[in-house]
Amino acid sequence: MKRYIDISYLVSGSVLSRLTELKTWMDYEDLAALNSELAGLTNLYVPGNEIKKTDISSVYCGRYFTKAWIVDINDATPSDVLTCDILGETEDSFVAGDSLLIRTGWSKNHSDRNLYFDKYPTVGVDLVEWLARKQANMILTDTPFLANNHYLPEFKEVYAKLGESGILVVTGVTNLDILSNGSVELVIMPLKVRELNYSLVRAVAILT
Image 1: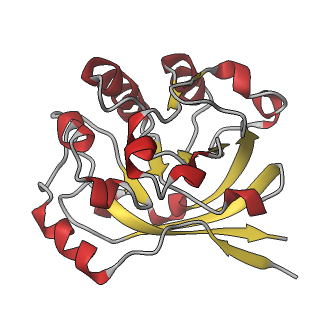
Image 2: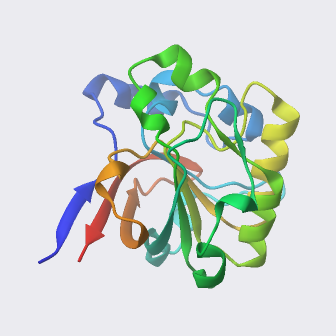
């Protein structure tokens, strides 16, 4: 029998009004400065640049149904930079079109907003380059951002490389402790928004 695990945060109705304040297309500086009320939820971001402005409505909907390999690093400490060393057996199992789900355990700090947004583990450039070589579909993590939003050069470098490779980004997933190691089928459904590359999502893991 299949089990369906909601791995997204609950959204209050008042937060939805914040979406109307977003720019029609968010660059890296906009993303780094995103209001914590929104950034503290489960979000999809479609990286791009001023030349290649890919919005959510133009992303093929089939990409939101994905096989994801779980990388478990629950011993991650504040400000850790995650490199290819975390991959383990996933490095050999991962094929083009797969996604990577990084479980750091950081969601346990969600109620402490200062800690949650301050020193979360981040993804290193070498790991992003590996995902690009593997033609990954998506990267997901239980942190508010993939890169350090307090240091814009690093933030822009990580997200720019993701944009060059067309890799989707989902941040702020939760309830990952329920999932076993290995792989899992995910459904990630954003709003179908024109001229916007950022959206809240409902994310579900399917266990068989």
